Amino acid sequence: MDEHLMQIEQMRKSVMLRKLILILFPIAVIIGSFFLFRKREPVLIGVAPFIAIFLAFLFYLIVVRKREREYRDFYKKNYVNAMIRSVIPSAQYSPEQGFSSGMINQTGLIMMGNIYRSEDLIEGDHNNVHFRRADLLIEDEYTDSDGDTHRVTYFKGRWMIFESNKYFEADLQVIQKGFGHARRRTGIFTKKVDRRHAFETEDVTFNNQFKCLCQNESEAFYLLTPVLMQGLMRLAAESDGKIMVGFVDNLIHVAIQSNKDYLEPPVFHKVSDKEILDIQREIHAVTSFVEGLKLDRKIYMQEKY
Image 1 (cartoon, one colour):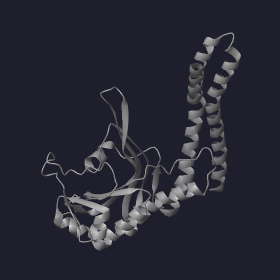
Image 2 (cartoon, rainbow, N blue to C red):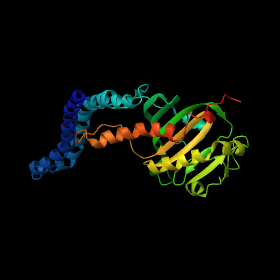
Image 3 (tube, helix red, strand yellow):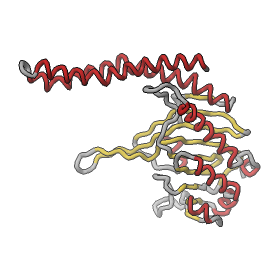
Image 4 (tube, one colour):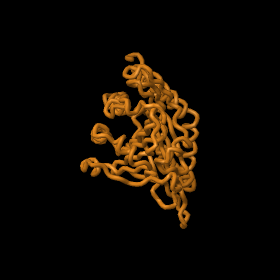
């Protein structure tokens, strides 16, 4: 690990130097052209910014991007991967892979825009529960009547999927208040067979923090045990963002809307305790959900019915 950190630091400094050049070069060209051509060739002063931007873009494509990608790949495949597997030995980390937009759309849990990216897939087993997690970015870009382009972020954060041997008929969705752009499927234009309806539990504190939707209320109450509700409230308190949980088919989906990406390497400062804590937070998000909600309990291990 120490050897990897030394190499990471060398690569980081190389990337940082090239990025500083990328930033300072256009500024130097513009300022230099002002002093050189302001009297003899004033036209060149107006052209200089475009030339500087073009040259900087070429420098980025030829020099910076390749070195940046090499640094990012080495950091993730060696440093991040080692930290993940030290806690979850069975975990497989695939930085370039993620969840398909079709799979996320089929859950019916989140609004889908026209821009979608997913990466940093981690897959493995913890306490006999198989899991997958990945970073997701879902955005919608549109042009208004004035011709102005706008972009709305529907979701940015981590999405975790836990497998169960039990088949959930409730289509239960639990949304922490403040979690935006959840797809609730409660409207009259939703097919009746797919439509969810809101209900409340007997726990007033839980109801104040979460909104519950389902198709089968009897099974929803069976799933929402006091232990599970306490676990969800504890997870919400520990989390760095609002959460949503969905029980769909035999999968439990957990979305944490954190607007952050904790597995990216730093560029302008060396790897510090902050990066270590960020990676540990990502691992803890998986293990704490399994342990906190007792996902290895028999309630989730029944055969399909």
